[in-house]
Image 1 (tube, rainbow, N blue to C red):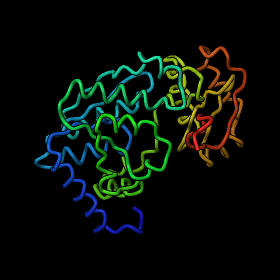
Image 2: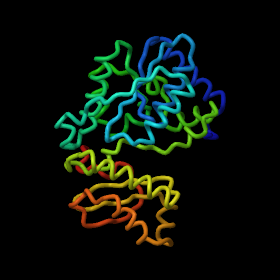
Image 3: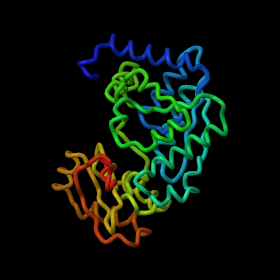
Amino acid sequence: MDIQQSNEAVECQIEQLKSILKEIGSLIIAVSGGIDSTLLAIIAGRTPGVDAAMFHAVSPAVPERATRRVRAYSHSENWKLTIANAGEFNDERYILNPIDRCYFCKSNLYSYIARQFESQILSGTNLDDLSDFRPGLKAAEQHAVRHPYVEARISKAGIRNIAYFLGLENLAQLPASPCLSSRVQTSIPIDAESLRAIDRIEVAVQERLKAKVVRCRIRERTVEIELDTDALHQLESDSRADIVALVESQISSLTDVSTISFAPYQMGSAFVDLPG
């Protein structure tokens, strides 16, 4: 736990969250399987007086590990969970992978939830997200989605502190894992088979190197494997050829790829021409 945040401060944040959730009353949380939305769902499900339901969207952009995680927590926490495809792959604007692709993804997600449920929609957006490039926040605003962490002024570090405080160590240590489409460079069209290949590569490389972070980036004619510092150093002393062969075995469907490279992990590096 962050030593700068006392147990008393963490308890205060939890109570703030519970107060917000109780005020809303009937709600549905879009649960991706990441730490933010999963923790929010756990707290909502454990708070008396809150009628909480959870929604998890599945598509080729969602790693299978995330869906398994949501199912596991749903079972252990006794959630009212709905799993469905929100339909972003039927939206040509999303498939074309513009800089604001996330807007079209979230628009499809929130529109689907709103058609199926009457409850207030909540997201796991945290305070830090407001300073990042997040086109999905515009879609959230258009669908009157509420962000309890933002309302309670809770950052990503605060979320991890809360998870540790609640004894959810595995969740607290969960690395960030945005959707698989975020691995594809802006303007390169999204396709399902490429995303499945990305997922297979990341799982295989992570298991091979015991890496904390693996990102398989699809760029023009290049697959770039981004790794955390320790894994990248291990790769340099390990057999790089073995990893290249492992990647090549998973990308037979990506016929335009001519180069496989390695680089340090950089958040959001598949985006190009970011505004501002």
